[in-house]
Image 1 (cartoon, rainbow, N blue to C red):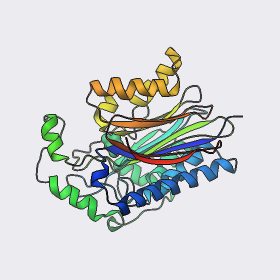
Image 2 (cartoon, rainbow, N blue to C red):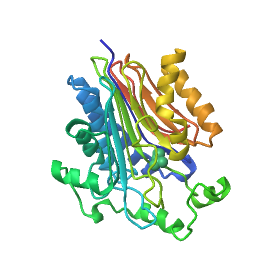
Image 3 (tube, rainbow, N blue to C red):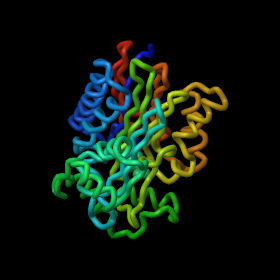
Image 4 (cartoon, rainbow, N blue to C red):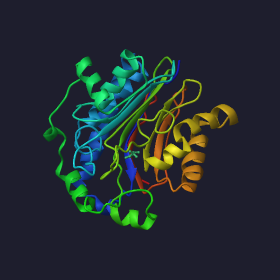
Length: 315
Ligand code: ASP
């Protein structure tokens, strides 16, 4: 039997204690704890890792504080377009969705894609049509609106500049507070099956149907019982080019590194070389976990059968 474990994140970036009010800090901690408790309860009742990660993600998607589902960031056109993915490490099945509008819980649609379509990755209008067909819950635009994300967007929407062909410094000025805010979960159940899930509104002011790493299997999300389950957060483009989540799996499979060793190589070496700011959480099939980031902070938490129950924000 494996020790069951759930690890979650709520995004990485320039998260500094000096920018945080005591109330906001408590709100983040409570939200992370609630998501951990909900996922952990699934595992404790003998549920599967895949159901546990989905349950935790739904809690985070429903919370305004995070850039996923409700509270997602605004695109250049001033709307929300959401991405999500889920992967079951026991059979390597996966479901992913990108560019979704008005779907209350993108992770539920990703699960539907995994279980009830013959496909892995659906996007845009087609994904929304599939949501309608599967009876996945929709919400009007107002449901997704948050003043905080709107103000973030207003500050940069008139610069046409949020793209990667600008220098890092210009980018930094534009994204003064670089908090990415995506949510993710990885879990190991009592049977030793592992799963990963990630959900996001992407990056503020994104355009041209930009999609980040979060819904891309192997980049932002990956799970394989033989190695690890990983969910990433950060500046998506370098994570895509590094095939970050799958690279952790490769380092474990081909180089025999432990979960934490492999994550360290990817986050502190490979991603750094690509200017890839952010982090990742992971579990293996024994229930070991790691939460590693190269940014100032990462909203994160872990709860396991051995009594670990922690949430943290800063480095
Ligand atoms: N990785 C996400 C993206 O690039 C953003 C995030 O993690 O917050 O879309």
